[in-house]
Length: 245
Image (cartoon, rainbow, N blue to C red; front, side, top):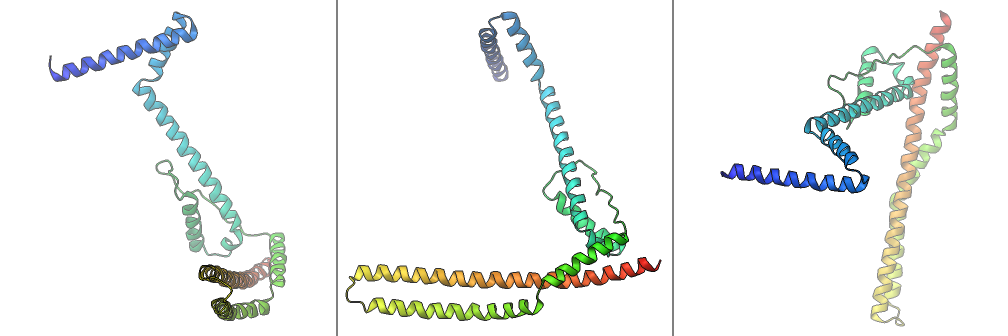
């Protein structure tokens, strides 16, 4: 017997043994040889390679369709959220913006072949929509104190250096005081010095982070103020043109 024939015979013997074991377990479970045979045959049909490949293909198709539905829903949701940015763009800029939104929505998702970006129409706003948006923008503009934001940024940028310098000076003074304390043993002194330095390093990091956070918040407010002013100008212009019709 050739090596190949021997291997085939071994595999056949193992398959036969496995089938016998499975049939015995099914017979014990159902306590009926006929039912066991029906179940066994069912498994043999269900787990052919063709059947497995078909189930995997169906599962993949479902996954791709689910991904497409999710991406399409996110695309439309994002586009609607950016309506007031899109509506004042020219057609080319709108196309680019919608393409970017679709790219974001589909990032990391596997989609069916030949999937195309969904169509999305940016309709011109009505008079009521423009009036409502005008009120929203005026409210945003009125809620942001531009002078305060500039003063806060200036103060915090100066405080970034001043607070760190002051805390470093204070830390050095505390460490110098500990080094002169004769009541402490050498190990106690080194331990307290390390704790003091760690404490002040934490205070410095906290002060820096607090100032950076306030600067970032103030800059975001100023950016929002500028964007709102620019959009309000466009809204007023669109409203005036609409009322003149």
